[in-house]
Structures are given as structure tokens and as C-alpha cells.
Image (cartoon, rainbow, N blue to C red; front, side, top):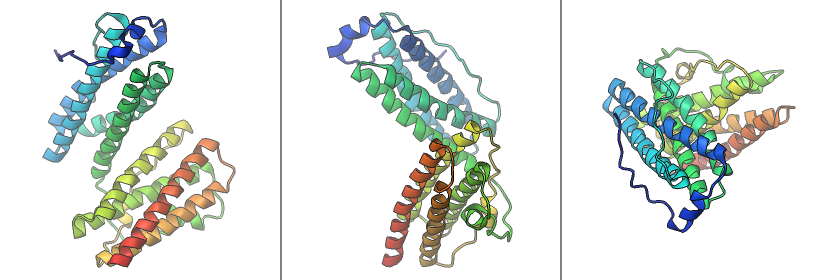
Length: 305
């Protein structure tokens, strides 16, 4: 049975306030968060044993370490609020295969982000607010990491496919666009950028600009995926690797990055002109703005090279 050292250091200036709480909803939500963290610790231990390589195994154990810290923090908060120890039980069963486990964990981490932010919003005490806000940020980073594991497992055979009907180029050439079309083209283009930067880093070694933008593209993908669930659309298969060609030089890689971001920005600007739901327009606008920053970074790299 899992055990931990419950010596959580809470804010001594607000301890008496904690004991006077009367909101049962936040207590139930904190207990639910405790059980979620307890379940995640067991699941990530299982995934670490199933991981295909040492690097992924170590990263999963780092995530598990974060979850242990969350469990101790949430347990300390619960005890200070109620004067009682929380209960601990596994509320979600971890899949038996590595890929299914990573997919499950990615979705679970995304849901945890919203749940912890909701608890933070409910809390009146600033100490509790901050602890759950920081935990939500950790869970978002975990989701991005699990997403990177999923993309790494994509073993699509490369071919000589034409990119004109895929991603941003497909969106820019399309005579009409529905919301499913836009979401599909957007996700395809973010997949394509991720695959392109993977190829460049594998070919030329570590280049800071490409490594940092690659991490940003993972966040873009993470922002788009919940929209498919929200609007009940099927997530397209990631076949982006079949559209990637290896640049002949680092300078050519920067040039391709510049053109890719120009196409990406034009795609989102085209989408924003349509009558689409506000939440989708907000995401498209945020991704367009991020791509403007990426474009500047690639232009600077091209000038240096």
C-alpha cells in the first residue's frame, strides 16, 4: 500500500480560517483530487515499467514524483480544513498496455487542469488558491509530455505525398470551409510542424530555436485536441511524417520554418474571418499570435546563419 510522509507545511497565518470552512463542495472536490493523485501515482508506476525506453521511463517517474508532491499538499490542506485525515482509494483503473496508458494519462492530465483551476476559483484562501493553480500548471506540463510520447509512437511510413491538400496549404486552397474542416487542417498543420522539427533535430542535432518551437507546437496541439471532443469530431490520424522532407542544410531548415509559419499564420487569419464559435476563434487567434513569434525567431535564425 502506498504511504507518504504527511508533514505538509501549510500557511500558519490562515490555519484557523481553514478550520472554520463550511463549504462542503470544495471539501468533496479536494477529496476527489486526492484520490485522483493517488490513482495517478499507481498508474505511472505501472507505465514506467511498460515504457519502451529509459528516457521515457525516467520522464514518467519524474511526473510521478510531481503527483506524490500534489498528494501530500492536498492531504495537508484537507487535514487542516477538517481536522481529519482524508481517505485514499484508486478511482481510475490504468490500462494494461503502454500506448493505451499514455493516451489515458494524456486525457486525464488535461481534465485535471480544468478541475484544479475550478478548485482554485472556489477557494477564498489565497494559499489554497495558489497551491491548486500551481498544480494545474504542473498537470498541463504533464499532458504535453504524454502527448510527446504519443507522437513519438507514430510510425507512419514516409512517402512522396503532395502537401497541397494537407494542413495550412490545404486550408488556404480550399474553396469552402466548415468548422470540422478548419479544426482538421489546423491540427494537421501543427502535426506537420512537429514532424518537421523532429526531422531537423534528428538530422542536424540540437538547435535551440527548433527545440523551443517544437515544445511550443506540442502546446498548440494540446490546445486544439479538446475542441474535437467539445464539438464531437473525430481526431484525424497523424500522418504528418509522410509529408516531411529533410532539408539540405540548417539554412534551408530555417527557410522552411519561415515559410511554414507564414502559411500557418495565413491559415488562422483565414479561419478567424469566418463565423465560428467564440471559443474556437479564441484558440485560433492565440495560435496565430504564437506563430507570429515563431516567424520572428526563424527570421532571426536565418539572418544569423
